[in-house]
Length: 365
Image (cartoon, rainbow, N blue to C red; front, side, top):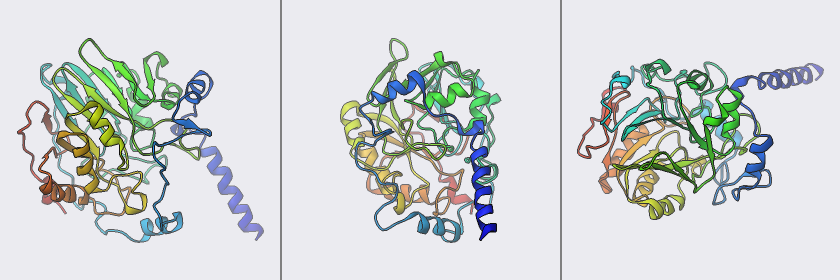
């Protein structure tokens, strides 16, 4: 018994000191915390979703979910072959082109009407604070920060490790002219060396004017935040980018709810909806879309084209690695949205609504 108590105490002490590492970021404080406390979405010491949102759906508990993740689920969580990719030179894109290049999972670069955006970049090959525990699939890490041009706006949806990568952001701090994020996320960034003058932190349903003809509206998502034991101290976001040429929905992570319809009514129709589709489970359906809900959300947003993301790079759920793309393609037969499904690094021409993409996931096991 004494040995067991000693081991437990030892683990607690190790965890305590390990979580002091910079990787975990920093909780909001000072003037930033005062702004947060005045948010209508912040109650009882935490940010809240618009609808009641339990972590786990009815009939599930953490013990059963952990057991299923460790010992059950698909035997195809990772592809057996290298994920296909192509290296597009981002520094040589014609300035007049409106392009999107996907890096896998929820990371992508966009150039729209002359402005360069980078969303949720993760280039370290890991989506966990513990090295080697959530490694990227073979073939998905062909880009580094050195491959990027100077970024006008770095856009962060929320502070989870598969969206906010410490190593990537440390390398990016001098290459991003501005950062747009939810309330509280700026504390991590400032702690990691970003100039606070470059950080634009907003609540839901606020407006950011980028220039005379381009703006971003901050919009809700149904999710949560946190990089340690403290949860929901920063705000999770989605965005609507409104440019002279296009209106793009940047979805972040979210479970299905009526916020999609509300965003569609306020800002629709949307030209391109970028929506989370992957790393889902019926056990956590309130915080991650299920595949059929991705199509429902696209319809709610009044979108013409759908780019499903949040797949094909990390194992964070029990489904087969290719199931998100298989299912969203199957369900889309009832909707007929124009699906954007590039391989990593392939250039998506945002001006060309007739551009087609092969079902590349059918080519590998």
